[in-house]
Length: 346
Image (cartoon, rainbow, N blue to C red; front, side, top):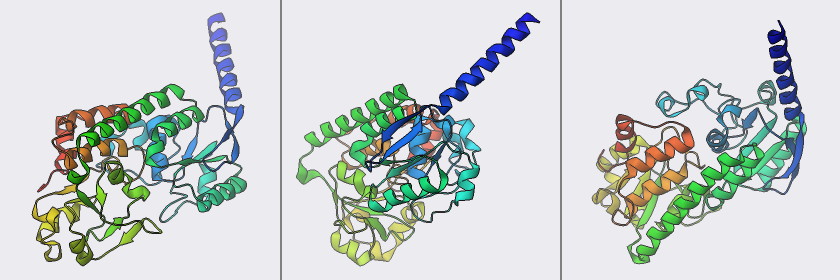
């Protein structure tokens, strides 16, 4: 009986300690300069959109209250088992915001995190949602160069500083590896690149946009000049005029049919077999979403742009990244399925 009483007492003490820890708060400053009072150890975090969900998954998956959209069947083998059945709650930001405040409140988050472009629009959204729900809303800079700092900052915010430091160190090592590759490749040997989105390949991302940052970071010469919105819709005739040496696409249908599409014939990338379909499970390698998944995208695309300078064993790199960031080690069959789509002609 005494042992049972002690066990019950210890359980009660632990529960009270956990509740007290959850009730503790501290003040942080987000990327917009807003001072926000947040839980000392957030236990239920709502990701405002896919980039934030990917970042949260990498840092603290057990704090996720749901997905912006449900993972596809093809994604599930590459996700931690405890996250596969989380509900799709919708998104607060990006194209087609789908969550309403009632759904948001029913998830009982103690923190909302958004990760992406820092503009007045997103700052005002954060202020409005925080005022309406009473839930602290932190906006984190989603630009590619800030990924190491972001991982440390959000790791600290989520009470996972060691995890944040481990992932940040990987990010820094990846950037250093890319710098070494670019040092070995003269600018006149860096190819012109077109990013093709959608089944017709005519939606693209302009130079300097968050969706095309990975191309810029690798020294590729994005043929689409910077525009006011980042994303643009162009014509095949315009792509013919640009004559890109490499086409990177995130659409499997376009990759499968571009070789037979008359309007794309004669473009150097199509003619030379340099059309590459980026892997996309569970998160895209290029920009779908533009989050920490782009780190392995950098290594994958470096091998496509600079095969003689980049590390040849991309399979080992992908397996290492998936284990470190996603908590899953793909086997040989999974790697073949994942990367086979990224090779020309397949």
